[in-house]
Amino acid sequence: MLITGANVHDSQMLINSIDAIPDVRNGKRGRPRRRPVKLYADKGYDSKKCRLELKERGIIPRIARRGVDKNDRLGKHRWVVERTNAWLNQYRRLKIRWERRADIHLAFLFIACALICIKQLHRLCTI
Image (tube, rainbow, N blue to C red; front, side, top):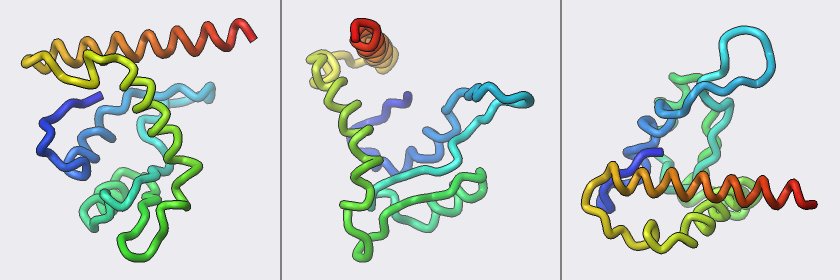
């Protein structure tokens, strides 16, 4: 997770976010995968710079084009992001940022993510 100011466009933080992804073990032998294979993004990320940076890192960009594609096509992938944002918006301390220090806000963000994971695990175990 990365936090920035409200006046920073999302596309400017795309590469920093990709580089911040931790190693992923998929059960196979060898070095763990560092980055995703494909990246789905909306029209806000439609720029040559974003596409080139992703291709340089070996990621297939699936970015909707402005004026060409409809937002409907990303629906099955986009709902995961919207659902996660809705879960995080349940925590008032995150919805309205009261902390001035970024490290404290990031700590609350980690706590909220841990609580969300615990709730989901509890829900899955009781089914």
